[in-house]
Image (cartoon, rainbow, N blue to C red; front, side, top):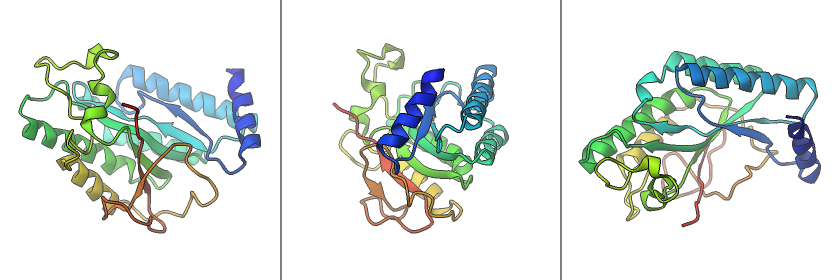
Length: 231
């Protein structure tokens, strides 16, 4: 759409130091729908770049779903990220969480399976040097949109138990997903300090990979953010 052109130009004029991203979803699976969305995204980026629109990168929402995650293909997703990077795009994993609707009732088993999904996805995503930031779509399960069933009834589990999609539980206790994410961050490749002249357009809390309570981000490392959602 033509308004994309105006939006990016106006944003750059308003804040020359902002990191300007196009944010989208349903791009990670090996399915006809996701492949079509990936193709459409590349066409859009090609148009924007041909018109010299000031876009810096792409946000990939990455709302992972247990019921269809078997169609996640590491090779296809790795190639997708590489093709974004080849266009000069910075990449932000912008809204990651895990829909556990198809997982068992037992919270311990569920938490382990959620952690495994984070680990499998991030092993691919963070291996791409163009990925410059990772944002969790919320801090704790109690305030996840997956548990706002009045507005999102499709996320009601068959057993009517609350979902457990995030890194911390309702009492802010760290879950296995925390350590899966930390492990992925510790093993991510070194990358250039790409955010030195841009800031992320969200309210965030930064954390080092080996310090889940906070700290100064390490040079040449990815940045990890929690996006706070209103209760």
